[in-house]
Image 1: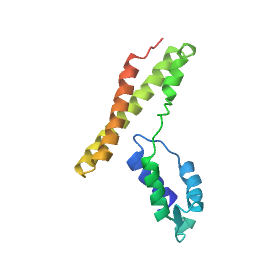
Image 2: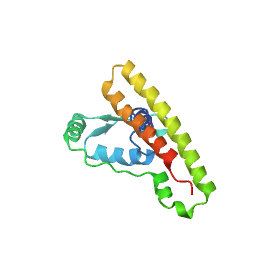
Image 3: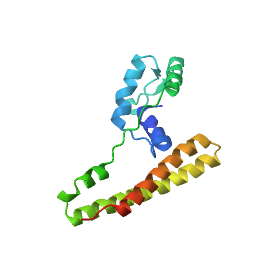
Image 4: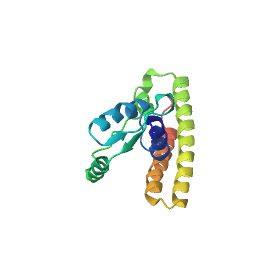
Length: 150
């Protein structure tokens, strides 16, 4: 797959609970190639560069899966702004909450649909990870209802 194809596949599978950027994907692919974890294929249209995982890459992935995942890195831009709520006007806070509500409602609906599809396709692990995303967005919506407005 090319970097763009990898990004699209990762967004579909991981996007509801793991964020990544296109620049991260494109920055890491050459590093992974240097390490022997992926190999370059024949360049495609518009100089697109496909990559394929190597046996060494599969072993490295297996080792990574066996490692401790470490601690969560919690970063919520809405909570950060709410922490400085006294510097906002009431209208600014209301706009912030409205936008966040819309985002979390849409994201929760999408994650629910993806979890249902994963279950239907016999992927209980993918469904479980997506249920985490559903619960996260549900918790965010509950928090937003109780957030101060002044």
